[in-house]
Amino acid sequence: MTMADLYPKYYKDVRHLDAVDVYRVHRLFNVTDNELHHASKKILLCGVRTGGKPARKEIEEARDTLNRWLEIQDEDQRIESRATQAELSDEMASLGSRGTPEMGPVPAQADNQGPA
Figure 1 (tube, rainbow, N blue to C red):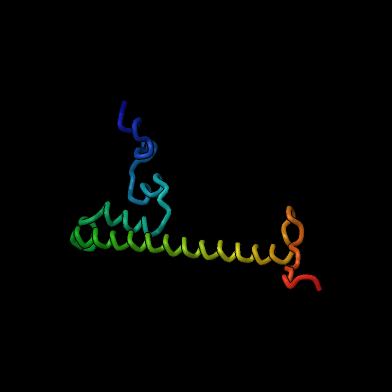
Figure 2: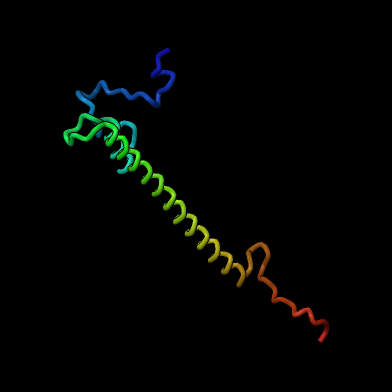
Protein backbone atom coordinates (compact mmCIF):
# COMPACT_ATOMS: atom_id res chain seq x y z
CA MET A 1 0.00 0.00 0.00
CA THR A 2 1.38 3.42 -0.97
CA MET A 3 1.28 6.65 1.00
CA ALA A 4 -1.20 7.94 -1.60
CA ASP A 5 -3.46 5.01 -0.76
CA LEU A 6 -3.16 5.67 2.96
CA TYR A 7 -3.59 9.44 2.73
CA PRO A 8 -5.48 10.19 -0.51
CA LYS A 9 -6.37 13.76 0.51
CA TYR A 10 -2.66 14.62 0.49
CA TYR A 11 -2.05 13.38 -3.05
CA LYS A 12 -3.42 14.57 -6.39
CA ASP A 13 -3.03 12.88 -9.74
CA VAL A 14 -1.32 15.37 -12.04
CA ARG A 15 -0.38 13.03 -14.90
CA HIS A 16 -2.68 15.03 -17.18
CA LEU A 17 -0.66 18.21 -16.55
CA ASP A 18 2.67 19.17 -18.12
CA ALA A 19 3.70 21.28 -15.13
CA VAL A 20 2.34 22.36 -11.77
CA ASP A 21 2.81 25.84 -10.34
CA VAL A 22 1.72 27.37 -7.05
CA TYR A 23 -1.60 28.48 -8.49
CA ARG A 24 -2.39 24.99 -9.83
CA VAL A 25 -1.57 23.55 -6.39
CA HIS A 26 -4.12 25.93 -4.88
CA ARG A 27 -6.76 24.74 -7.34
CA LEU A 28 -5.90 21.08 -6.90
CA PHE A 29 -6.31 21.38 -3.14
CA ASN A 30 -9.27 23.80 -3.32
CA VAL A 31 -7.50 26.62 -1.46
CA THR A 32 -9.84 29.54 -2.11
CA ASP A 33 -9.02 32.26 0.44
CA ASN A 34 -6.77 35.05 -0.83
CA GLU A 35 -4.91 35.19 2.46
CA LEU A 36 -4.14 31.46 2.30
CA HIS A 37 -2.97 31.85 -1.31
CA HIS A 38 -0.59 34.59 -0.22
CA ALA A 39 0.81 32.69 2.77
CA SER A 40 1.15 29.44 0.83
CA LYS A 41 3.02 31.15 -1.99
CA LYS A 42 5.41 32.77 0.47
CA ILE A 43 6.09 29.42 2.16
CA LEU A 44 6.47 27.43 -1.05
CA LEU A 45 8.78 30.00 -2.61
CA CYS A 46 10.56 31.37 0.45
CA GLY A 47 14.07 32.46 -0.35
CA VAL A 48 13.76 31.91 -4.11
CA ARG A 49 11.54 34.74 -5.30
CA THR A 50 13.00 37.74 -7.09
CA GLY A 51 12.36 40.17 -4.24
CA GLY A 52 15.57 39.12 -2.51
CA LYS A 53 13.94 38.75 0.91
CA PRO A 54 15.58 36.35 3.33
CA ALA A 55 13.64 33.13 3.97
CA ARG A 56 12.98 34.19 7.58
CA LYS A 57 11.31 37.42 6.39
CA GLU A 58 9.10 35.48 3.96
CA ILE A 59 8.02 33.08 6.73
CA GLU A 60 7.30 35.99 9.10
CA GLU A 61 5.14 37.60 6.42
CA ALA A 62 3.36 34.29 5.81
CA ARG A 63 2.73 34.01 9.56
CA ASP A 64 1.37 37.58 9.66
CA THR A 65 -0.96 36.76 6.76
CA LEU A 66 -2.18 33.60 8.51
CA ASN A 67 -2.76 35.58 11.72
CA ARG A 68 -4.85 38.04 9.71
CA TRP A 69 -6.81 35.12 8.22
CA LEU A 70 -7.58 33.96 11.77
CA GLU A 71 -8.70 37.47 12.74
CA ILE A 72 -11.02 37.61 9.73
CA GLN A 73 -12.54 34.25 10.70
CA ASP A 74 -13.16 35.60 14.23
CA GLU A 75 -14.67 38.80 12.82
CA ASP A 76 -16.96 36.83 10.52
CA GLN A 77 -18.04 34.59 13.39
CA ARG A 78 -18.90 37.62 15.55
CA ILE A 79 -20.87 39.19 12.69
CA GLU A 80 -22.75 35.94 12.09
CA SER A 81 -23.43 35.55 15.81
CA ARG A 82 -24.81 39.10 16.04
CA ALA A 83 -27.02 38.52 13.02
CA THR A 84 -28.35 35.28 14.55
CA GLN A 85 -29.01 37.04 17.87
CA ALA A 86 -30.86 39.84 16.09
CA GLU A 87 -32.97 37.31 14.17
CA LEU A 88 -33.82 35.48 17.39
CA SER A 89 -34.66 38.73 19.14
CA ASP A 90 -36.97 39.74 16.29
CA GLU A 91 -38.61 36.31 16.35
CA MET A 92 -39.11 36.44 20.12
CA ALA A 93 -40.65 39.93 19.88
CA SER A 94 -42.97 38.70 17.16
CA LEU A 95 -44.02 35.67 19.20
CA GLY A 96 -44.57 37.78 22.30
CA SER A 97 -47.24 39.79 20.55
CA ARG A 98 -49.08 36.95 18.83
CA GLY A 99 -48.19 33.68 20.62
CA THR A 100 -47.19 30.48 18.89
CA PRO A 101 -49.28 28.20 16.68
CA GLU A 102 -49.02 25.43 19.29
CA MET A 103 -49.98 27.56 22.28
CA GLY A 104 -52.40 30.04 20.78
CA PRO A 105 -52.32 33.74 21.63
CA VAL A 106 -50.48 34.90 24.69
CA PRO A 107 -53.04 35.86 27.36
CA ALA A 108 -52.96 39.34 28.85
CA GLN A 109 -51.17 39.38 32.20
CA ALA A 110 -53.40 39.57 35.26
CA ASP A 111 -52.84 42.47 37.61
CA ASN A 112 -52.84 40.09 40.63
CA GLN A 113 -54.99 42.48 42.67
CA GLY A 114 -57.79 40.00 43.37
CA PRO A 115 -61.45 40.32 42.45
CA ALA A 116 -62.64 43.71 41.34
